[in-house]
Length: 246
Figure (cartoon, rainbow, N blue to C red):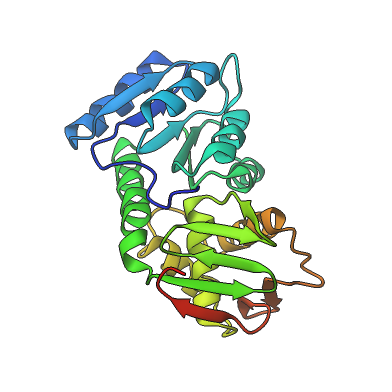
């Protein structure tokens, strides 16, 4: 089962970087905000810490020894939905898009402002940890796919589909709108609230692409998420909704 709330509020934040100075800097600023912190210096240790520590959030460098950061993201996403903030010197647009496409929730290039990093951590945690309370308990059904918001679970033709917290949130917003077109700005507000930093409405295109891939949805003949050119996205058909747990 995929849990929308990834960890208890007292769970640690995992900081992963092979540069001890970066680790110490990030740790200092997060601990000033009273976040408990654990660290890892390579990708293999990061994966072990994700499994053993069940962190509240991961701050992740990409250029890591043992196992690279992109692989860490993919393996973490295959296991669950812990929020991931990439912190990397690879700050080109293509690198950011790739990181988001693999499953990162946000991307902050180096060099970075520690204050901005803390602000982004707050934003991600506020979004992911309030989502369970904000989403009404309901089951949405569309073309063989079901989203159970109470259980934070998606099935497709009876088979469970592993989605991240952000992808679950995005899918829920689209299904709840039941065919109404939602602009990228509207979807961005639903995912992030008041977005901070350089999160742009084009990030929605990356999230939709990732969601479609996991659902096996063809954008040219969509079953679940349809593009309305120049306007945004909508559910690709009438959505059936029932309240509470079945």
